[in-house]
Image (cartoon, rainbow, N blue to C red; front, side, top):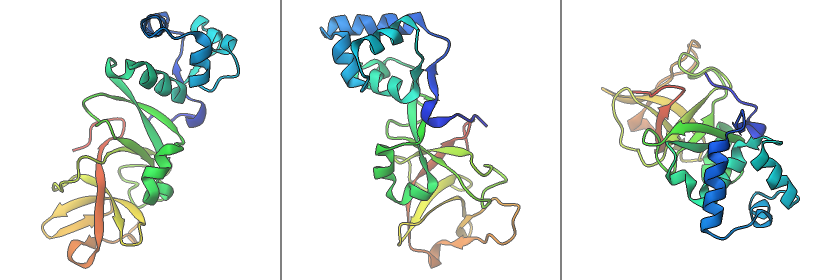
Length: 204
């Protein structure tokens, strides 16, 4: 499992001159100066942005995500920065994405453009994801397939991560704790927020 100090995770370490050459080239194409780019990244000064280009200060993951999006570099990269939100906040996951805990790099094509990651707390899925681990959710993939993992919400917008089984239709924990029980679809009012697609590896 990949773990990060999420809010301060560095996007490029060590310094990547080729990446910054692309940034500078795109700035020239769009006639943008370093002062403007410092404002985009909410840096205190032009010199702070200059230090990023020179490698005197590391680029944080959320800064790289903003920079790539603003300059259109994210469309060229094979890697996308996916926001990580807390599972306890995932009932309001759209709002939670606005203030993520951090970002995780994922391969473009494996995850969708609206994908987000949830940090999992508790032991209801500990045979797959340890307490404090995370999985990436694709909200554009909501069709239920036997054996796949989904983030679902009940009528109170409480969220949980469970594996779906079709015969009979139910959502099941993957837990070492026998207190966690299956949730039968016919007895449950729910909506599927999205399918879990990665956890450091592609899930079924």
